[in-house]
Image 1 (cartoon, rainbow, N blue to C red):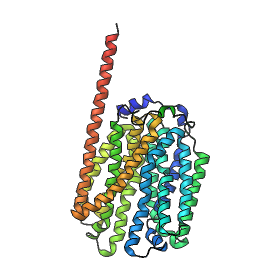
Image 2 (image 1 turned 135 degrees about the horizontal axis):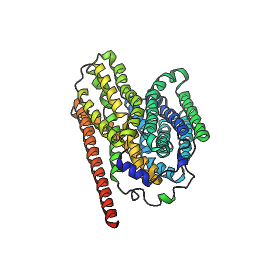
Image 3 (image 1 turned 45 degrees about the horizontal axis):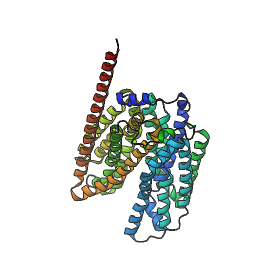
Image 4 (image 1 turned 45 degrees about the vertical axis):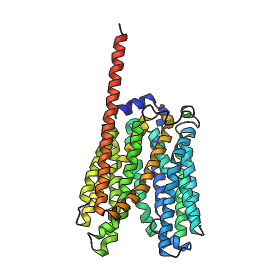
Length: 429
């Protein structure tokens, strides 16, 4: 672990009882995050059809309303993530998971009962406002797992979240023809209700409600002795999601240039899934590696490798080449989010960890919104290769920024240690 992370951790040592149930909590959090993400993403394949069922007939309007309905959740989730993180610091992590799972179960069921597109958009806004099980799970796992297992545990959780993103659209494409769109929403609500029950029955809270109020009286940012690691991780999380999502708007069009017309949608689907599959496979391994080598070291390496892998993607001539490169990029990126959460956790006081991780979630949602907009703009005005080049430059710049900042912090810590030792030597007879 990095020296800075170690010093911050020892400054806020967790009580031993906080680790008593971390494995059981991790299992519930992985299951709950998987089910809630599946429920949130399964509507992707049939959302335009549902919008049409709700009375929107014009083709352009269907596309527009589908985009609004899908993006609405990310908008409110980005705004409220820091609030839920702060409330988790004040009242415990488990109540936030209970709120998120019960709220999502109700909202998903109500989506199946919508009568017009305005109600659907409103419910999607509420889903972002009341949801957040995955981000709440990240807070609980990050603050309640032993420090030497934190990266691995967050990697396992990240794999569950990404698996939900991968499986959700597959279920959404196969279930509605069997039971109908409205019944699919009700089934998703029932699945999340099982998560709610599992959270109530099996998750053990790490501290009594209100235990951290005393430590949260100061403003969250004012309580940070050194804000640079946290700011760097907010930037890195946003950069990761921006890099992932900037390619999404152009993939289908890009694939159409290198494969036969009848293969475009199939190959594009494989390209989109390849990165997610790579991340699922590598997240826990890279998390375990980070526990040994230092989380910041893995972040720097992952950003650099991903930036390099983006360059040959601009020159592929066959579909399998793009699929392979996206898979390798997913392997590289799989460890980033767990390591980002670990660095934040080890560099902030325990009393405000939830709030800071909430800001991290907001930064990631910002990347999810900005990425497709930036990728679509650059691809439309400058060319699709330029999207890969631009994203590569951002990733490599992020690696350099983190490397310089980490070196600066370690040098400052070393100087502080030497000056403290010299002062102690002068005081000794």
